Length: 131
Image 1 (cartoon, one colour):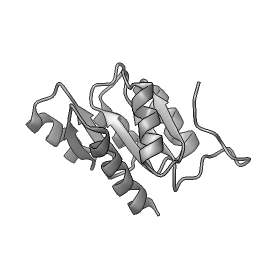
Image 2 (image 1 turned 180 degrees about the vertical axis):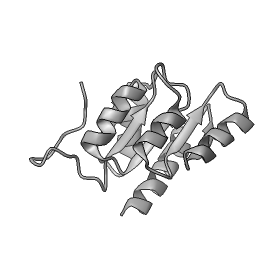
Image 3 (image 1 turned 60 degrees about the horizontal axis):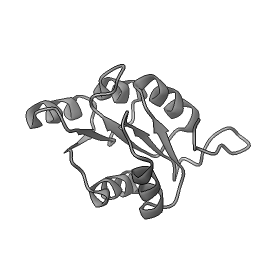
């Protein structure tokens, strides 16, 4: 079940929606992102397919995506969504592999572990670019 709230037009306001694609994202992290970001809706997708659907439905202004999703690579998902500037993260990939994947889909790369401040800063940068 999505925690994104759609307007009467069926979309979440683009200037504020954040999409997090991470199989093991914690509820605490999502709540922290909502609280420390700009207070907009945070959509959580646990797979690439779910993330593509949410991106199409909600047109998020900011995206945080794990490179290793259970059904496909995060860079492939970001390429399909076509939103440059997203944050691509990984705790398993070598730095060179993560950087190459991020360059391929025009994303920003960050290696895990990440602090909430790191993620909030990257999301705020995306939200600023989307306004």
